[in-house]
Image (cartoon, rainbow, N blue to C red; front, side, top):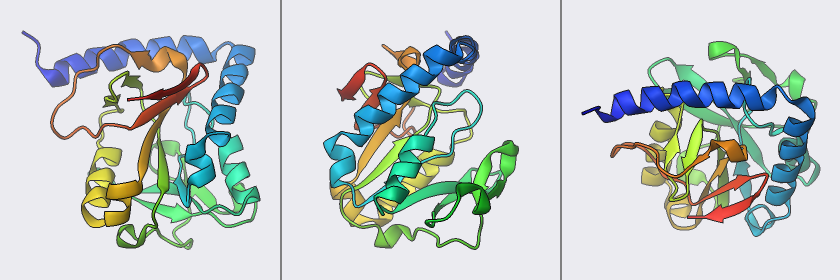
Amino acid sequence: MKDIPEKKAELRKILRSEISAFVSGIEKKREAENKASSLFLESEFYKNASMVFCFLSSKNEISTDRIIAKCIQDEKPVAIPRITDKNGEMEFYFLANIPLNSQTEPGFYGISEPKISLKKVEVKSVSKNAVMLLPGLAFSFCGTRLGKGKGFYDRYLERLLGQSKNFLSTGKKIGYCYKIQLKENIPCDENDQKVDCVICEDGLILV
């Protein structure tokens, strides 16, 4: 019988192939990203958010460019992650109202990250009604998330939920992905953090 890590590894391999095939269709990819970003930006989650934890999309991840630009335009605080070491730790930094490329730099794994000179999010001081958009290789209809296997988000969320009473009581964790990344079942263990809903081009799914 296969254990959970082995099941996850097999699923990641399948998903990477499926996602790569999907994003090769440029028009289909852009249409999905436009629909998904509109769904989030028109939702009560965004309208009521005091701040947005977001991510800078890496290769084959659904784009968050429009969401980040809208946050900056609306003067809604938006923060993106920076990996601090390869052992699974990261921090979020607030973006300023200046061109994005002037406040980011290449980081671990070749992904753009915020410069350390930006203001760091202090987890104990996170305001009420903060929203976090989470990347992932897959999400289930019951909120299970399958990441890339490094545990960055699981560790950060464990710290955030443990130290921020505001986020624990009013924060929302939202999986953000393409429809093809929705799966009926995803193997998980006790360290995997679940999301409160998932947004893709086909709609917003509460879990």
